[in-house]
Image (cartoon, rainbow, N blue to C red; front, side, top):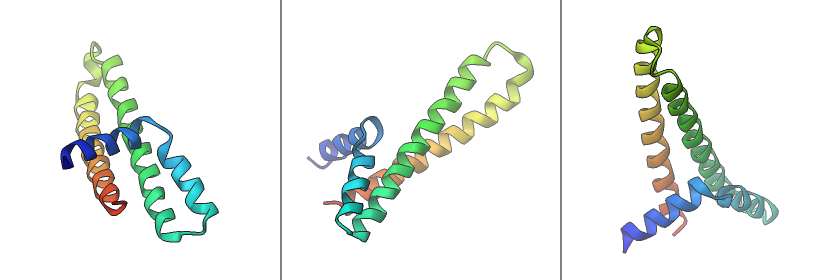
Length: 97
């Protein structure tokens, strides 16, 4: 059951506007603890989509051999950003339980 909850939370964090609306509602209610958690969720969402843009750049440059080492470096950075974002999203979603 915990796995299903985590998958649902990750979907809500990365593919919907849940973090932004959660941030807006927490700001209106002057709940600074929830405001900080929602700000972390917004940052995790931005990090996820930034790494997606990096993967798109790698795909566009895959046939150009002069960018080979740049693509490897960018791929490693994107993997790190994915892992960082996922770890942060899971940690913050556990605080919301």
